[in-house]
Length: 317
Image (tube, rainbow, N blue to C red; front, top):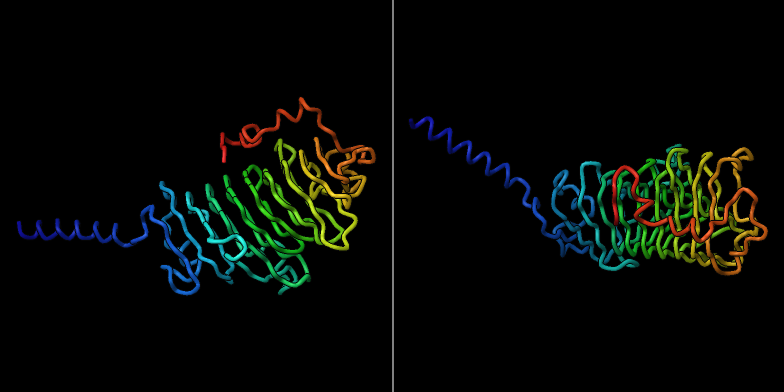
């Protein structure tokens, strides 16, 4: 009898210890601060203590500071929110580029997001490598990712939206770069974003698969160019069926009259490049390439968040 009681209490104690092993397994906010006033000094440490596949919302609040980290949000994490104290003063930065030890484009990221159902607010994500090759700031692989009021800084390939059929929503964000600085196969909606072109080059390089109905949609965005820039393409198709739409956007005079580049001549027959109701000196459509398409009002009305994000299953950010 005594032996049974001891075993019983040992099992209860083991269960208690297992549940108590992670004191952060709760919906409370975790605070990160470089100056040591939070629970952690790095974002990576805070991410590490979050439980896999959480069924509650967990906030990682990041105080002002520069966090030099090459950060991965693993596939096992869901329902977390990374929220900065200040968009311009909460900075996550790294400086890899493609020609360091021949690492190639896809390992240069500052932040790689493999998890799904994750939100980012009021943060700067930066790749501050010298202009010596592709250098990704944000690399996404997860689905249902939301970016609100964030800043993305880099040169070539600033944002890589990986994995076809994943859905990304960018709202009130600042995005800047040089060549193909928004690229990849994901479906991404950019709402009221500010996009800065730093050299004469291409804004987008979508690689939307043939069987995915939507790629990049820019709605009510403002495009601007750095001093000395005078010839910018809206995009070029990285793969045959690249999809990009600019609608209700402010396009500056530096946008080339033809608007789009084919990358390879054969892609003129397959690339899906569209515009609707844009404004500004760069919005004139008379000299646009013949293989792009100007939507009618009726066609444009069908392109909504609800429609675009109905891939796989319904999601509204």
